Image (tube, rainbow, N blue to C red):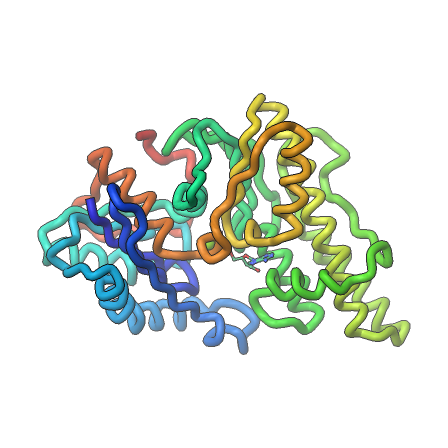
Length: 341
Ligand SMILES: Nc1ncnc2c1ncn2[C@@H]1O[C@H](COP(=O)(O)OP(=O)(O)OP(=O)(O)O)[C@@H](O)[C@H]1O
Ligand SMILES: [Mg+2]
C-alpha cells in the first residue's frame, strides 16, 4: 500500500510517501521557523496561511523524488490533532479533497502517535511492549505501549512541556526560537558545576513532571548574572548547561522509574527533545546499566515531519480504518482514546 502522508499540526509542512512493502520512498519538509522567529513563537494564523502555500509544491516534490504519479497512491494520511486548529484544517481538507478526487481512502492520524512510531522507520525498530518518553514542544509524557493504539499514560507534565521549557529559557536569555537546539549548542561550552539547577519532582514518588520552575530558576540566575556585571556570553553557556543537565537528569530518573515499575527494558524516546544528544547519551548510559536498549528516530524525524504520519496512517489503513468525508480535526485529543489495532 502506497500512502501519502501530510503533517500540518504546527509550524512545519511535512509530506512523505510510505510504501508498506518498500518502506519510506520520499519525504519533504518546509519549516516556517524563519517566518515566526521575529515573534519569538508560532503565530497560528501565519502558520495556516503558509501551509496552504507549501502543500501542493511539496506533494509534487515527493512524487517526483519517488518517481511516482498521483494514480499510484492507494491512500492518504493526515494529522487530525492535537495541534493548531487552523493549521490542522489545511492538511485535513487537502487530504480529504485529494482522496475524494482520486477515489482512495483517507485516515486522520494522532500527531503524538506519529511521533511515538517514528523510530519504527529506523533500521532496528523497537518491538512491543516498551515504555515511551514523548518529549516535544507541547508534550512530556511517559506511556506504556503494548501495541499500536494500546497506550497507557504513566505520567505527564503538570505545566510546561520539556521543549517549551527549552524554548522559554532560551528566549529569556535573548536566544533564537526554537530554543532547544540553541541551548544544546551553548551547553557544549558551559562550565560544569558553576550553576546547579533543581531536579523537579524527583524526590517524591510518581511519574509526573514539572518544568516551569526550571525556567524561573533560569530567569533568576540570568538576572543575578546581569546584576553582577558578569560576562553574559559565558553566563548563557553556563546556564544552558545547568538547565540542560537538570532536564536530562530529571527525565532519566523518571524513565528509570517507569521501566522498573513496568518491568520493561526497552525505552523509546520521541518528539523534538529526543534529538538532544545529552539526553540520548544519558539514557543510553542508564539503559546500558539495566541491560536494556533505547530507541530513537534520526534527528529530522524527531521534530515534526510527514514520514511519521505516513507510517502511522499506513498501519491504521492496513487494519481497515479510514474516515468518512467529514473534515474533522481536534486541538486536544488524548492518545489513550485511540482504538487498538
Ligand atoms: N537538540 C534539541 N535539544 C532540546 N530540544 C530540542 C532539540 N531540538 C528540538 N528541540 C525542541 O523540540 C521542540 C519541537 O519539537 P516538536 O516539533 O516535536 O514539537 P511540537 O510539534 O511543536 O509539539 P507537539 O509535538 O507536542 O505538538 C521545540 O521545543 C524545540 O526547542
Ligand atoms: Mg510535534
